[in-house]
Length: 354
Image 1: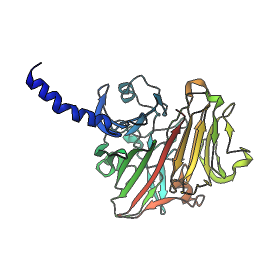
Image 2: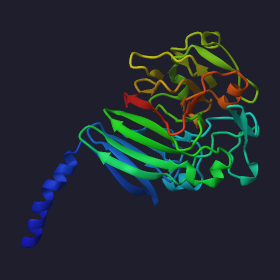
Image 3: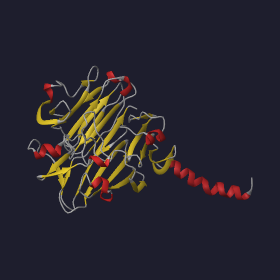
Image 4: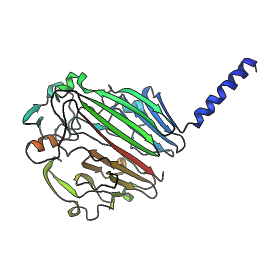
């Protein structure tokens, strides 16, 4: 071994040891040729992987070797090639369904342009899940690891895309931050209204979670809710609600055995810190999902069957079809952002027992 090689090893060793000692790391890399961002909590053995070019979706939260998110793909390349709902999809500028080919706000009707070919539709032909689901134009603007956390902020500039403004003519910018800290993953959403008029807001997430230490029918669910919204046969709220205990006598402990959840809930009960805490539990493993106060409604989706062993706790700023229900006087909690203003809220994921 040459003297030069020995010198290089001596110089490199402290740097390598320092990297290994870092409690958190954050890096840009690739997986199967797809750009990804990885956030690592090295002390707790947690790795979060995000695909900015596939809707900025966090498709993995590996805790002790197990993925907290449901991700039914062999590779990220397969996901990018034929994306479908899994991981942590972001729903905007409307979450879930609209009940017609347009929406209302402040007395005006805004028509969707079906000829553009960029609308997603449900089985009944209704526009669903907004316009950004798998968009590739998210730009990483900040990536950092400290002694206390690892985080990444990515940005989507809605105002740059005429084919989106044609449907939703409100110029705005979205910053999404994934923050891994103290064993939990927080997702902060910041929306800035860049236009000259008030912008309606009806956004949400559709995260897919899975438990590994028990079959789906052995999972139990905690719903901190008081009301359940009545739905039409096309799964759109009517604007009326009933006490949740009329449908689920014990919402704090619901067995998924023989239970199909696809409901919209309101009247969220809050802990002392203002969060509403939903949870699913297996034998030892638990996933708790905490909604910030501006997430006022919740969709919970857990279909039956072994092929789809997941549950979705969906934080929603408002109920499905909120724009149109508010216009009809059937919903009075629609949020908005004034010209030049911003909306910021967080929801977080807390796994344990993995």
